[in-house]
Length: 132
Figure 1 (cartoon, rainbow, N blue to C red):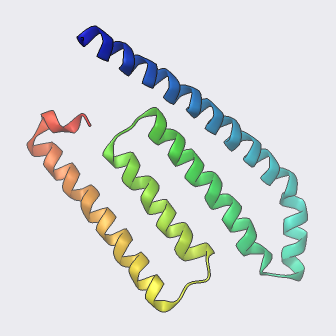
Figure 2 (figure 1 turned 90 degrees about the vertical axis):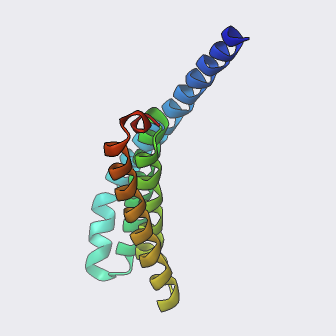
């Protein structure tokens, strides 16, 4: 039974790596698309500053993709929290939000930072817990 479970875990790791390769391919293509559009976007920025929000959204999506790739390659609580922080920050910066939504976003990011800090302190006191 232990051998079966070990084999299943190895299959899961291989599948995670395959998905990570697809994510990496998407990130590379997204960066190439962003670079291709850079000159056009910068010219449009001279005429209309609202284009910057669209550009920023693309950049945030790439950054979140990179963080997600890191989470797939090295799954641990710190990487998961980092992805969540970027997702909340992206929502707050790119989307049009109400003051209430901004407050909730700020509280969410603060709670995620505190949770990450707590996990680091816990891992110092309990080194065996450091390997999520």
